[in-house]
Amino acid sequence: MSLNFEIERFLLERGALKVGFATLETLSGGPPSADLEYILPEARSAISFALPLDREKIRAFLGKESHSAHERDNFEVNIRSSRLAKALAIWLEEKGFASKRVISNNIYRTEVEGWQLSMPPDLSHRYVAVRSGVGSFGWSGNVGIKGLGCTIILGTTVTEAELEPTDPVPEEESFCDRCKLCVAACPSGMFDAEEDTSVTLGGVTFAFSNRSSYTGCQFVCGGFTGLHKSGKWSTWSPGRYRLPDDEKELMDVFMRAVANYTKWPERTDGTGGYVNMALSDTSLRLTCANCQLICWGDKAATRENYRLLTKSGCVLQRENGDIDVLPSRDAARAFEKLTPEHKSLYE
Ligand code: SF4
Ligand code: SF4
Image 1 (cartoon, protein in one colour):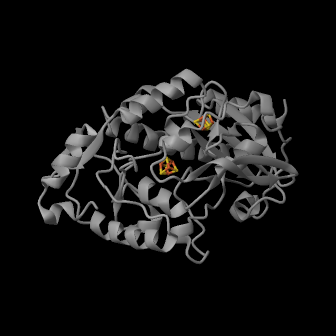
Image 2: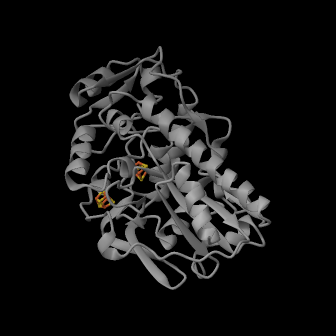
């Protein structure tokens, strides 16, 4: 029985949806975050796998019925992914191969100047996943699987074992139909609807949408703001900042928003939150990820997710911390009636 087969069985028996294998060669020529030796100097291969998110909880999140149910599920699946990657590393070590798991999220190369803003990951789970055929890039740059879309969390283990690489997903097997609803669902306008960019890994080129500003995503994805520029819907964040196109102006507003965020009252709509190492003294909430969550790898289901999101209304936070979800006009009116001190914390 080959080691590839044994590893695949180990992961599938523990809930993985799909398993793939990449090597130093198949990741060669990629960006720094495709470098397996950064994780383990003696690395030769990486194992990629995907775990499922709970779709019912995603629907409730997008439709603003429940914030914390998906937030909790998301954190739990990320923890499960990190634990499974570690269990595999230990199992491989017992077979005599030096191995190391990669934490599922929120680990950055802190030696890179300005890492708090650029957030360079220690290893890109996405690159290993697309090169090994666990999933493919959608237009958003999220990784997905046919029939599941992007409702997955990736995991990776790096090892010195020499494994047989697996092939990328063929173009015709991609889950992405270029519907571009991920572009429409992004309040920060991060994705270009027409222009693409690409990454080349081991001689294979993968394309996805060109990005505008990463600061915009950090602004929204960090939970500091959430109102879509149409004013008609928001993420789960009560922030209502206008995001300037100019990067310098955007950074100024972002810094002000981060300072204001620390003065927001504690939310009363369920406990949750996480600490991002780039802002380690602040608890952040998962309020967006729309680009990932709406994409279910099925045209009708993705369209329905987009409908739910854009009809879900806007979030408003009261002075006592209560979170109200209101139709957009009511939210705008209620926001104007807040005390000037409280209002100034959100715009
Ligand atoms: S939302 Fe549409 S365009 Fe975007 S990644 Fe999913 S299928 Fe592709
Ligand atoms: S997480 Fe939200 S803000 Fe960030 S790119 Fe996705 S949709 Fe846009």
